[in-house]
Amino acid sequence: IDGTKSFMIGRPTFGTLIALWEDNKPVLGIIDQPILKERWVGDGAQTTMNGNIVKTRPCKDIHEARIGATTPMMFDKSEDYGRAYHLFETPPRMVWGGDCYMYGLIACGFMDVAFEQNLSPYDFAALVPIIKGAGGHISDWRGDELTLNSAGKVIAVGDPDLWPEIERMLRKTDNYMYEHADKAHKDIEKNGCHIIYIPANDAQPSVAYSIGIAKTTKHHDIVVTGLDKDTAHFLINEY
Image (cartoon, rainbow, N blue to C red):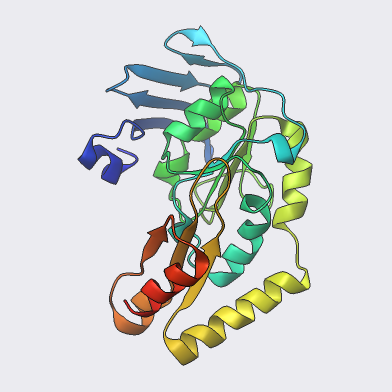
C-alpha cells in the first residue's frame, strides 16, 4: 500500500502498487485505488485506466503546469529544499498531498508534474511504466533512469517537452540555494530549527514547517498552514 496515512483515514489517494522488474528496470506497473474503483496499468508503451487508453496532456509552460508533491516535509535537507523551491515557488497551481494517485492523474492529463524524494524502489517501480506508457517523462532529479539503485529523488512530467525547463530549475546552483542552505544550518545550530514558509496562492493556503527539531530535540518537526508568516513563525518557535 502506498499512502498508508491516507489509507488509515480513508482518503482515496492511497493505492496498491504492483510492479515487475526486469534487468534492473521496472517494465510493468499497476496502481489500484479500491475505493474509487480505478486501476491504471502500464507497460511503458501504453497505459490504460479501467481498460481505456489514457494520455498525458500537452503543457509546455511551467506557469501553466499543475504541480504536486505529497508533503513539503519530505524535503528535509536544506540543500534539497533549495533546489525544489525553484520548482514549487513558480506555478500558481502547486498542490500538496496525493501519494501514488498523483501519478495516475498525470497519466490521465489532469496534472502535469509530481516531484518527490526519499522514495524506495517499491514506491516508484509501478509508476515508471505507467507514466511512460501514457507519453510522459519520469526519472530521478538528474534525468537518469530509475533503477533499484536510484537514490529516491523522483520527478514525473506529463509533457516531455516541459522536462528541460524543469531540469534547469532543479539544477540551479545560484546564490539563493547556497545562502538558504547556509542560513538553515546556522539557524539549526543556534536556535534548534530552521523555518521554511511557502506563501499562499490560488490553489492552496500558506504552509510553514520546521527543519531540525527532530534532530536537535528528538520531538517531531511541525507544519502550520493557513497563517501569515509572522504568526506561523511565532507558533513554531514556541513549540
